[in-house]
Image (cartoon, rainbow over the protein chains, first blue to last red):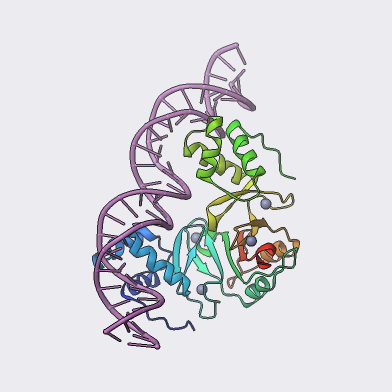
Length: 132
Length: 132
DNA sequence: TACATAGTGTTATATTATAACAACTAAAAA
DNA sequence: TTTTTAGTTGTTATAATATAACACTATGTA
Ligand SMILES: [Zn+2]
Ligand SMILES: [Zn+2]
Ligand SMILES: [Zn+2]
Ligand SMILES: [Zn+2]
């Protein structure tokens, strides 16, 4: 389980919004959705996002500039992430595969370097879109 | 080897610049560097970049919003890419590992889905920075 | 208390990327 | 050859994403 971080007010508001969402949210879409709660400026959103990413409560989907809550209790906090992304409906799912994370954590490049941190994004069609 | 695409003037100017660079280049840095060759607007750069990515001559490093030439003649054009990124000096290297690409191309998620397209970015310290 | 650390609110600005439209070019179909 | 088509270009304007700088506030710790 994640280490308990006592989220601050802004962090909590923003985490709750992302956590409730079924798909990744973009920073300015988050901003519009929390303005009624008193968060008025982009920087307030980005600061909370930065912290939430840092402590592993959310992940950034780099190819989409969007943020998703981590639902993978065994994931190596913010360090080793893998996602599948549907190129039609943009559904994003965090992959939690012991085999995959073990393979990547042990991967060595030509020089024998190991990299404990990585981000992997798979692209394809989700089940639903495949059937269409 | 890559299929030969006859690059247009702008595409060639921009590819040559990226190809000569030892590190990934950002779009606006490219723009400043090609203004003397008559390319004046961001869109001219982005259009060439889009095309070059599409045909696999360059790749985008998503976590850095930067572009690097593909030097991996056997890479599955623009579809399956892996990079190592040094978190100190920002050196980026394209990984060409038959084992890795085979593993990822055959990876199936929980639902048995396979994804032929992926982007993987490893983070760590390069050899040089490790020694410091 | 005094101090350090982290978070906040705010304004302004930097950076990255696309929309829309008219004109041009090259290649291929008639 | 002419016509048509798809693709590229040049241009202006604007959208979308992200950070700098500064004054202030809350919280924990010695
Ligand atoms: Zn996770
Ligand atoms: Zn889908
Ligand atoms: Zn490549
Ligand atoms: Zn380095």
